[in-house]
Image 1: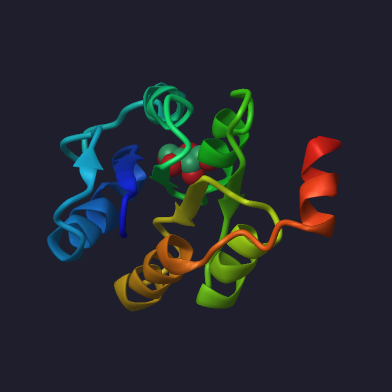
Image 2: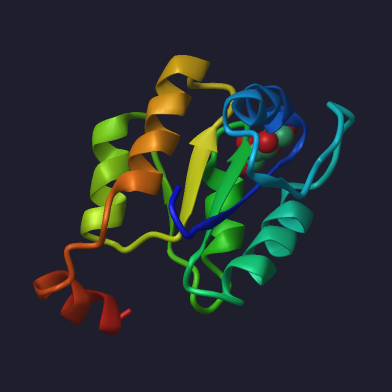
Length: 139
Ligand code: RB5
């Protein structure tokens, strides 16, 4: 996690997984939600993405039930490249090929061990640039 500020947020469906991840990655900045009481995922996607675009060393983790709502909401923000993944191989590729700055996890469809591997891989993989940079510029 060298030189990176990592923010994490979830809705109620991602709250349990977020709590588990925070026990492992205790330096992450937690932007809520703070309980399993029902909330609206866009509120948390917007709160987190606002922080990420402030600095290129800021990275984010978003969690909802499927990961789809958070992905849709996060990707509406200019400068955000959010990728929904459920395994470490894909977590590596969204960094290498897509320069993703937000990792989205499906809280109801991934276990803590796989989620931990996704986060570790996402945070330790560099963007490959080259032909991928050209493609990102077309988005
Ligand atoms: C909440 O029930 C659920 O709809 C939400 O977490 C997410 O999966 C939406 O995409």
